[in-house]
Length: 352
Image (cartoon, rainbow, N blue to C red; front, side):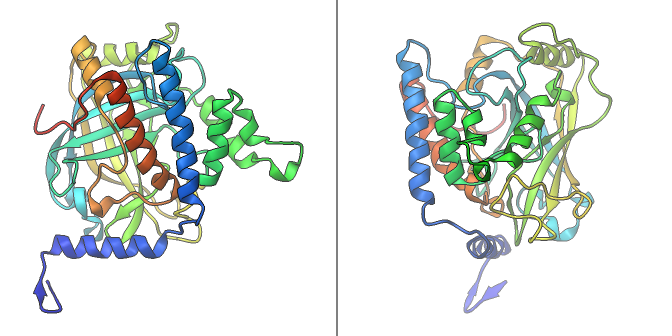
């Protein structure tokens, strides 16, 4: 394709168009940078305090892993509308991947405690990504419970004080109650999860898809795993171990296009994008082969991995305020915990 007097590869044209789209459709509040630094300071303090108490420095969220498993992420573009064949989804290809399943809490606690459950996917060997990887981060609920950076400051303050209810009800004035967010938190806590391989997961926040925006989701395919015991404090890990000891698991990876911007906001991840208005479209198949994943070496490898939505192709740039906060927070905390633990910080390269 020719622009001016230059012949540019089509991929660069698409990336340039993506950057222009992002700049024109994101709304960055003037106080966001200061709010992000407040959040970083609070989280960094909590990580340092924990490490100073004689334990290792852990993630500030999703601290308890149910396991890191090897997987393959196979793109099937023949099923994808041509205008959505962008970035990772542009051509048929199978990527090796690591998937980390987790509880969302910053505390390591019994799996019976109501909590969001995470599925973080890391594709390896991704050209044109500065990290060499593409991360897709999801939880088992379609929306997030915090709207923006300013609200996240209050959310983190409430967590730091050990009183999360204060975020939803910050005082006696009912006009300051966050009833919408409180409903989301209750829905997340009440969602039953007995086997990570049986749950559906959503991105909650939006991302670029070429010249439009998307959200993504992973939905189990095939028969549900029969391993659903829940008596042990670690039943999510144990049920996943039992399933993968005897057979594989799979997910359909799907994308949802932003079709009605006024009702599918970029800057508010507490609003669900209607599947009636824009159905999720399968674009890839995730296959998790039979395996054992509980060796000390693999567990240590899992804990040293860093996941962030900003490990991404420019064509899938994270969008919205919560993702912009994550860029700074995730980078800072990843560097800090690796430094405190004396671990090398690097992205996996090549095949397994």
